[in-house]
Amino acid sequence: MKRLELMVHSAAPLMVAAVVVLLAGCQSFPTTLERVEQSAPAAVALDIREWRTDEGTRVLFVPSPTLPMIDIRMTFDAGSARDGDKPGTASLTASLIGEGAQGLSVDDIARGFEDLGVSFATDSYRDMGIIELRALTAPEFFDPAMDLFLRVVGQPTFPQESLERTRQQYLIGLARQKQVPGPQLAERLDEVLFAGHPYASPTSGNEETLPLIRREDLQAFHQRYYSAQNAVIAIVGDLEENEARALSARITAALPKGERAARLDRVAQASEAHIEHIEFDASQTHIAIAQQSIWRGHRDWVPLYVGNQILGGGGFASILMEEVRQQRGFVYGIGSGISPMASAGPFQISLQTATENADEALQLTLKLLHDFIADGPTEEQLQAAVDSITGSMPLGVAENDDIVGQLAAMAFYDMPLDYLQWFDQEVRKVTPESVRKAFEKNLNPDALTIISIGRVAPNLTPVETEEAVTAAP
Image 1 (cartoon, one colour):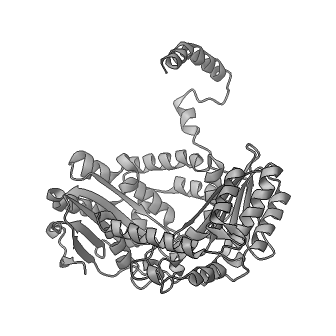
Image 2 (cartoon, one colour):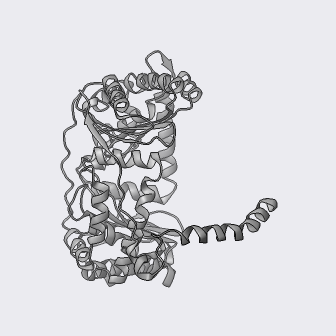
Image 3 (tube, one colour):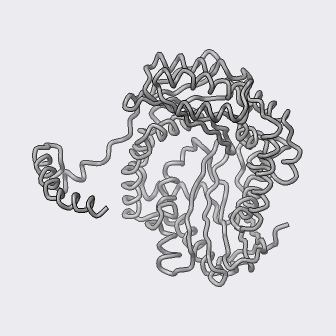
């Protein structure tokens, strides 16, 4: 290590000299403040190709010949919102794809992918189930990898022993979550925010429903929701378009035919406040302040996103972090976020604080939120957020797996192909007033859900709320 450091230090003057020479000959390098200001990061532009397979599956493809690899992400409308009366079905289905296929054991599948240098993964969220593959494009690897992949995703067997093992893992995980405050708070918050909506279904199920889920339930869920009609496909890699088209045709032909899942109703915003405390013996108090706000594709998404970066989503540069933690030391951590999904998009502030600081931390956080909704950001705060967002956007498509993730989201939520360029342009158009109006329109400070967990319920008196603090059932 010391030898390496010596080499770097010795080479530094030569490197600096070389850089100076190169920049001196670069006519586009900004050498004045005016030229620096004109050198804003360019909007992200991807060479996106689009088509539909014979089964009607939307496909987005970006050729990337830099590496001899391919990334595939299949996204299905198969999240926990489709669980019905057996929460946990979607998650178990996703977990067990890859545990067995027609004529193949879990060991056969794992060994086959490993021998071919394939990365295979599945996951499940509220909106979607995901299957991912990364493989080398050399025919001696790619051809057998695709044969195995198509058997796994199209003909999973959901072995009973795998179901029992995974079910027990889920139940153990749920038992452990009851020993820490964060997961309990998150679960209760979802129940309140999404009351009466399929999004309220716990993504990993619960102690009552998990034992009821049978192998036949997983098979039926796969046939119904992991179908060609209910999927979108994103492909990025070292392929020609005609090769990608042939590949997508093979994939959708291997899937159940099925039909597209019915659109979910949108979650309604609460009209009155909900304040609740969960008793838990811990030295810290966890607090969530939340409200259903928008959904994916909402016209106010961009100013809300930019405003959230300023308020609490921008790390140490945000208002909440600066005022509540840095200036006053009331919290260990604090932040905010907006999570738009197909039918909902809750706004949430989360904070963790010592119990003796909970009153002041919550009261100050609510005051800052109220003030931001009423007044919006300053011009300086806005410009800093816009610069940060637009400057970091190219990092979101720096690698092939980043690109395939962006494509999958665009296809699943039916976004236009120029969405990334559009988003960049809209961020640059945001003003302090458009942020203020978006927050004022989409957040009601008098109808917030506030849930805390800890030894003592925080005092809300200075916020002038008349809601009673109640214990969770």
